[in-house]
Amino acid sequence: MSHIRSGMSIAIGGFIGQGDPLTLIDYLKTMDVGDLTIYENDAGFRERGTVELVRQGKVRKIVASHVGTTPYIGQAMNEGKVEVEVVPQGTLAERLRCGGAGIAAFLTPTGVGTAYGETRENVELDGRTYLLEKAIKCDVALVRAHMGDTWGNLIYRGTSRNFNVPAAMCADYVIAEVENLYVLGELDPNAIHTPGIFVDAVVRANIDYCVLREETYNNG
Image: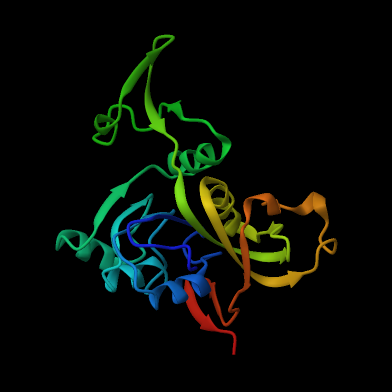
């Protein structure tokens, strides 16, 4: 976490509470950093996740596909406390993936003819209009895996795979919190979702928090 500095861009994995790296976010809350730009699917779930960083004034901008699960984000945006850019979900995931794959940009028909489409360059190709979407590269990524080994090979569970995979690809430095940690060789290599080559640091996740049926429970 010492790699995180004020003004950096951070990709955060998770999908509406599933696979959110809350252990790492809790630590980030204690750090003296600010002016952060956050890329993720949402801004957390209820009052957990990135919304906590926004309340602390650490976040300058959020780029997400949905922030409705955290009503405070809308309030903070209207009060000028944080900038919010909403991007179609599939487009955002692909921009993150392209950032890790070395693809500078891609064309998509999603958003053509909308207010969102007016913010992008429109390209005509074979008689059809597309939006030019640029790849996202981040300074740091925070992800959470259900299983992982000490070399950073990660396996996600269920919908948590959606944004953790591209988030881990697009950043210069990747920190993974892991619920169940194994030594190298104990995990089936064919089951790995994020190869260890992408991961720079591994920590044990706090498993006291989980989200089930849209309610927050404490496992203890």
